[in-house]
Length: 378
Image (cartoon, rainbow, N blue to C red; front, side):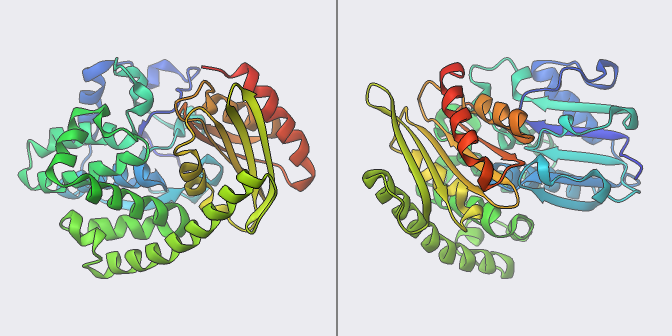
């Protein structure tokens, strides 16, 4: 395949510092946002764009905002794909005639062959000189670009509700002024319902269909009430999957309480790690597409506890959480991926890894995770 000549990466993940700096934008702060805006403005109708995005709410909503900009500019998107992680990313699946790749909430710099690109703009929250870059999600970064175009194209402003998708990565909506303003335009209940629908359906059903439903929706209510064909399908699936998720979470909570596997739980380890804080490692069976959802729910209300929800099948899939605690779970995820082969990373408080491992490796992986708890403190 002929790799795209231009690359725009919108995400918060650690930057691959060994890339050829002559090909990477070196702007910082607001100048970097302007660089990303100029990147999109430089595209013409003869460009052929591939849009890649993470399949959680943050990835889907950041992709939606970029999609709307490109649609307004009449820039053709010829290829669109959601990935659960970089493990799923395959460069050879991108058509040969693609000239530009836009990547949302995926650290594509770890995968690119820099000899095959002419230039890359990496809009990364760590380059914006902000107080807490780890909560400045891909959707907020995409909205910074979107807002510039909305000032030029009035019709775009009616889609600001997509910013609410960042709530899956920004648990505290007060982290960013734009989020506060958009939430205030609706209600926090509607905002949370929207975020839950797109995140659960994106992770556990079909992220491409979720994005399609958003593109066909004129407002937030069309999504959360299923008022068009696509959103109706999404809402129906959401209700069914929410019931399954509740049952799994109930099994996990009971297993943690009794320290023995129940229902969907295959194995459970609960260790005291410091004071009244715990390390909880829970293995599920036949529940892989719900791992992130379960990890989010189990960590909610367990401030400071280390949570690992995992399952082994064709690959080892692990989700790490530590809300308001002292463990940098993105570093733990990266180290586990490095030790066992695969990809790992994310936020300080929420991360994941997909590794080359199976049931025979489980004990060693658990031992390594428990070791890393000592070295990966905040």
